[in-house]
Amino acid sequence: MCGIVGYSSLKTNAVDVLLQGLATLEYRGYDSSGIAVFDNDQLNIIKSKGKVSLLKEKVLKHHLHASNGIAHTRWATHGEPNEINAHPHHQGSVTLVHNGIIENYHELSLQLMQEGYQFHTQTDSEVACACIDAAYQQTKDPLAALQAAQTQLKGSYAFAILFDEYPEDVYAMRFDSPLILAQDDTASYLASDIPALLPYTKQYVVLEQHEIAHLHKAAIHLYDAHGNEKEPSFQTTTMDVQAIQKNGYAHFMLKEIHEEPQAIKDTLHAFIHDGIHSNLERPFDYARYEQIMIVACGSAYYAGMIAKELIESEARMHVQVEVASEFRYRNPLLDERTLVILISQSGETADTLAALKLAKEKKIDTLAVVNVIGSSLAREAAFVAYTMAKAEIAVATTKAYAAQVALLSCLALKFALLHGNMTKTRKEQIITQLHQLPDLLEEMLEKDDWSESAHRLADHEHIFFIGRGLDHALCMEGSLKLKEISYIHSEAYAAGELKHGTISLIEQGTPVIAIANEAALFDKTISNIREVKARGAQVILICRQDFHVHKELFDHLITTPPLDRMVQTILTVLPLQMIAYQTALLRGCEIDKPRNLAKSVTVE
Image (cartoon, rainbow, N blue to C red; front, side, top):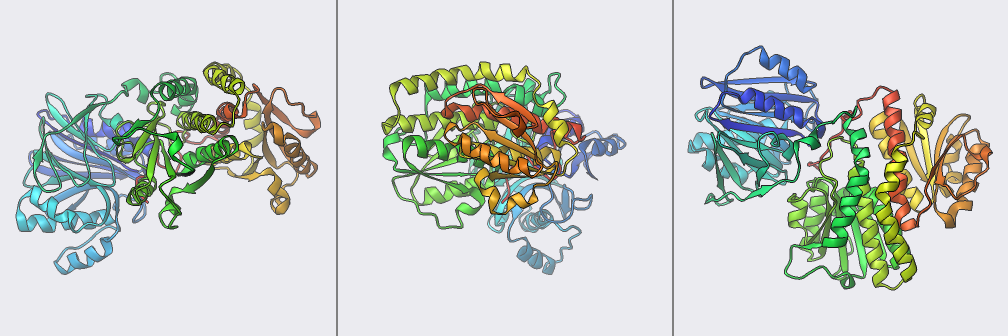
């Protein structure tokens, strides 16, 4: 979840590179930051609570000249977010920064205290630092010490490490938490995510499980889990510097909403032409599966809810949607005719990767729907379908979610055609509408239907979303988006469930956002809107242009072009995103980096 940057160079610009790297990774979410560099072989550790800009002010006062170092933005898991618990940590001859969670840190701390170590923080990371130092004091060899420490540490970790006796070197190792490496003519780099490296190179190396990296000036030395040196395998990212710049937009979120037409166009083109990539010797076979299990977290989970509704209703296949954090603790019912679909923007979501591991252990086919080529999920799943949303910087997902829904709708169409539940005429209509989507989204973005809704919501602290069928799944995402960035408490309900208790919370002026795009359920949804309206609710209604609704049933109306239900949800999510954005703007919230949230959740 946090950001890691490491740098070893022939130049003395390490401080600038490290600080810039941290600033680039701010979107990942954090509450403190820190840096460690050697200046004339003297170790300097500087930490700060709060924004990277505060750390930068402290660091620049020291006028450091360093050729290598490590830096970190921390999202608190063990211990409160303060300067003491911030990374880097130092024990003995070792300084490190850490992403992940050391599950056996308590047992290790008791053992290490018996050996004379004292701990000054509440973090598991300081214990890991001492564990590595204890091994180093025995071996006096960084590589051997890291190999020894790996046998003791349980949990997930990505470490960037300095040794006092090796002031020109940076070491790294990982397990279940991502790290990448890069180099150019004058330096070598490591980072937890590609954007930190884009100003320097598009070539990178993915550090594999249990591998150890040694960065020395412009050279990278890579060692496998057994200590054997191996040749780094470089990949090329398609991401460019423009992707991590706002390009005139007030926020990354707004920019990324405006990029949805292109993201969907690229995703549809890639899926229709390239299909599903196989990491096995056999190709993907739709006919092989009788049931589907979808596993995801957050917005990806709500995209999975849409896929469930479409596949079950159109292909008549059984689909179950599971929260990834619960999946592997449930002993799920899986057999060889089950396809497990795992959805993740980053491809590094810890709970989703754990679900993938379980499915693989049971020899069940897995399909990753992922946005990052070369990510852990993409490499380890049996099959991969890529969303082509490119880099998404805002913590609250917009274009990546829309691309997921577009791809999953195409997947549902494929299964529906296979099982003979769709006419040729309807199939052609759906394909035509999918191709029209980017233009329709562009037209919607040119309107300003969201400002009035935002003004109606901004002064409230409790809001409800209601809908049925696919609209209910959309409500879940709309509610999440609003609470993520505006900090308004919002709840999404299947509209028919209101009468079973929740309607007691509706009072005069309570905002209710209702979605009514499901033709077969339209009359039922309207009846539910009447129920909340009769109790004083202030209704914002989102529905198709061809549906007629009496004016007394809404306070504000947003209409969308009428499309087949296989396509409609991809279009309808845009108003929900823009309403959330405009509401957060009116409330003065920090839209791109909402409090307590991280872009990539790489810990359980």
